[in-house]
Image 1: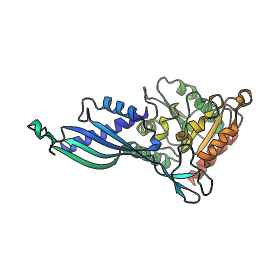
Image 2: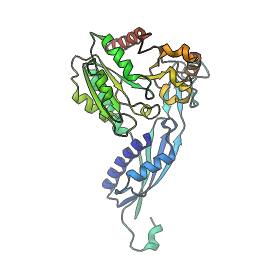
Image 3: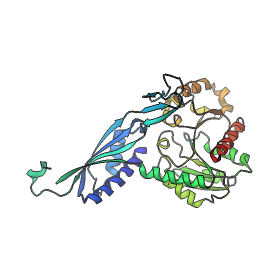
Image 4: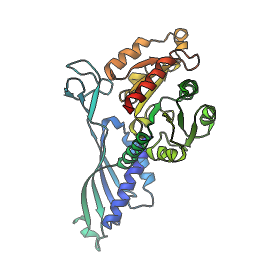
Length: 126
Length: 219
């Protein structure tokens, strides 16, 4: 359940953001995570929902997209997309790479509710 | 009124920043720090029990992560210069802040090595930098020979791979060649060392690796 660590770190960011923006609550969160993180979306959603209770992100929708892994061979410089169990370089045959992408966990976009609208029919306006 | 805020921020930047601080602190003290990861029961603590006395006169401290109990810390207590036990109380991996607190509690002066025994888990510790200099991934013979292929996220970033309990290899018909073949696709940078923490077989190569990595680090 490394998803719980990620959910808690995400909430630290969101709570700070909500405070800085003076937001009443957070409605939607877009997260990008590298494939190497091995995040199970359901596990992250569950951890996030539990950890967000009582704070501005309670009930927020969490959208997760996965970034593919990219690697560069340390020996010949070839850039390629390794398979999860195969980091072998097609050119030189070694499996010794620098990871260019695949380890990141990035918060991309947050939709904040700054004030409750007076009339419900205006709720669709931004 | 709603507002969409476009932010591009790393969610784990707090952990990564503390990890960098830890590494800088260890560098200043001239300590080589190793993050040892494996499944529960592979023999991380047994490895330390065999390693610590053999490293003398070089001095080592140990940080042990477990969900509960201080049993691992008690096992190495008389062997290490200092030991800190971290109970994660359900947490499935160590975090950089926990190691930072351990560094506060340790007498860093005069230490040569810091062994960080991570929580026994082959998935979660892989994604969290603790501030170590080298990652050691361990597997053991009774776990089966297919561990490398099953847990690539643990073995791909490792700087050294240890296969423990090799004294049982013949008894269990262990296929070391399968481990080698999987590593050939996944990680050709890390040496594979076969050892038995129990019998001491293969321990010399591990000790040599530790000393040479420390020398290389200090320049």
